[in-house]
Each structure stands twice: as C-alpha cells, then as structure tokens.
Image (tube, rainbow, N blue to C red; front, side, top):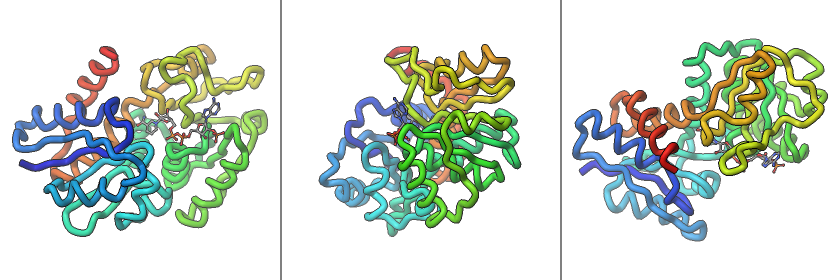
Amino acid sequence: MHKVGIIGWPIEHSLSPIMHNAAFRALGMNDWQYDAMPIPPDIVHYGIIQPQRHGYIGLNVTIPHKEAVMFYVKPDEVARAIGAVNTVDLRGEPIGTNTDVIGFIEDLRAHDVHLKGARVVVLGAGGAARAAVYGLSREGAQVVVVNRTKVRAQEMVANLSLNGGVQGVKVQTLDEAVEQPVDLIVNCTPVGMWPNTEATPWIDGVPFPKGVTVYDMVYRPEVTQLMRQVEQHGGRAIGGLGMLVRQGAVAFKLWTGRDAPLDVMFTVLKEALQAR
Ligand SMILES: NC(=O)c1ccc[n+]([C@@H]2O[C@H](COP(=O)([O-])OP(=O)(O)OC[C@H]3O[C@@H](n4cnc5c(N)ncnc54)[C@H](OP(=O)(O)O)[C@@H]3O)[C@@H](O)[C@H]2O)c1
C-alpha cells in the first residue's frame, strides 16, 4: 500500500482526504490511501518522523503546523520564500514545499486572468496572503497589500523581500489603494466564510472599483458576499475552490507522478461542501 496523508490540529474538517481518495479511486489506484492524522502542536516533529517510519511517502500540512514544520524538513525555494510548508516529500530526507502558490497562480491562469503589469490589491497578511503576494509578484503584477493590522502587512512584505527577493510591494489603506485603477482584488482573509456569510472584507464607504476581477480564496460558501459585490459593480468574481483543487493536484503529481483528475476532485469537493 502507498500511503500519504495530512497532519493538522484539528483535522476532522479537512477536505483533502475526500479529494485525494476520490482521485485515487477514479484513476484505479487502489493501492493508494490518504489519511488524516491529528497532531497536537507540541509534538509537531512527530508528525513528520512517525508517518515516515510507518511508510508514508508524502504529507500535506495544515493549520497550525505550516510554519513550525519548516524546522523538521528541508524547505525548497518557494517554502523558504513564504516561510510555510504545506506539502512534504518523505522519500529520503523530508523536503518541504508550498503548493498554494502554484495552485493559486494556475487557477488564475485557468480563468484567463492576465497578471503581467496588472495592479493587484491583496486583502490580508496571513499565510494565504504570503503565497498570493509571492506568486503574483513573480508573475510581474504590481501588488498592493491592505491589512487590518498594517504593521503585520509591513512585516510580511519585509520578509518576502528578505527571503523571497520580492520587490516593489506596497502597503496601503484600502482608500489609498483604490485611488488608482485596480485590475484584480484577492481576498486572503477569512471574512465572508461560513457561517458569517453576510460579511465582506470590503470597507463600507470605500468606492468599489468598476469592472475589476475579484478572486476570493474563501470557498465556503461558493459565492461570497464580496463576489456578489463585484458582480453588482460590473466586475467578475472567482471563488477559491479552484485553488484548493489545484494545490492538491500539484501535491498529487509530486507523490504519484500522475496528473490528478481535476474534474473528479472538483465534483467531490462541491458535494462535500453542500452536505456540510
Ligand atoms: N482556496 C484555498 O485553497 C485557500 C488556501 C489557503 C487559505 N485559504 C483561505 O484564506 C483565508 C485566510 O487564510 P490564512 O491561512 O492566510 O489565515 P491567517 O494566517 O489567519 O490570516 C488571516 C488574515 O485575515 C485578516 N483578518 C482576519 N479576520 C479579519 C477581519 N474580521 N477583518 C479584516 N481582516 C481580517 C487577518 O488580519 P490581521 O493581520 O489584522 O489579524 C490576517 O491578515 C481563510 O479563509 C482560508 O480558508 C484558502
């Protein structure tokens, strides 16, 4: 049996086992399994060592371990740049990477969103925002970060510059950010996520840019309040489910060497989200 899995705390709500196990079944990979493993924060290193000892060949890493795991694996360039690991290859010395960056950028590409030279406002300064800012900057976008706690955004930009060579990212208020035309807004905050589905990260009174595209990393609900707002202003809305699928597909390919069945993964995730 080929074993992969996910470590986190708590882990019961993770959708990754459903997504990966459905992909294995769809490809007839009956000797593969994906397990959820609850690992408390104080023993995170066992979350790497023990699965490896038990023959697991790969892991996903989720909240709250993405940063802490950096100390127990060899991070690749992307993981080092954004300071977080979400995927580990356990064959030999554990190597950590972060597939959120490529999952996000590939989903934008799949939606024909043009990034080179685009002016992008990123809302938030947590782990998801780090991945977004790094990926967008590498694609040649001009990025402005807006965050509730400004100093946290400034720290994030300084770290990305130091560890990822990312230059030219600005930190502004939302008012300042919309003074110039905006092509893309990326929500990297949890605002609008179920059960607070009426909430929006857009600040009341700040004019909504017309004709802009919104990418909302929130995927539950599938259509968020922010997505409705952009459509009301003649813009385009893209939800975060595609990023979830594509970051999983990159890990799947890394472990198995096979292309993941994206359509199967989308379908089971939609079903699982509707059932919750
Ligand atoms: N689609 C996907 O595949 C995917 C992948 C990764 C993450 N996500 C989603 O992205 C979201 C962020 O995840 P994360 O890991 O980056 O979280 P995180 O590290 O906790 O960061 C959250 C960010 O949101 C801001 N924020 C939180 N509550 C806020 C509020 N009420 N008003 C304004 N700002 C608020 C925080 O601001 P402060 O700095 O001021 O606290 C922080 O910058 C989550 O909903 C997560 O599910 C989706």
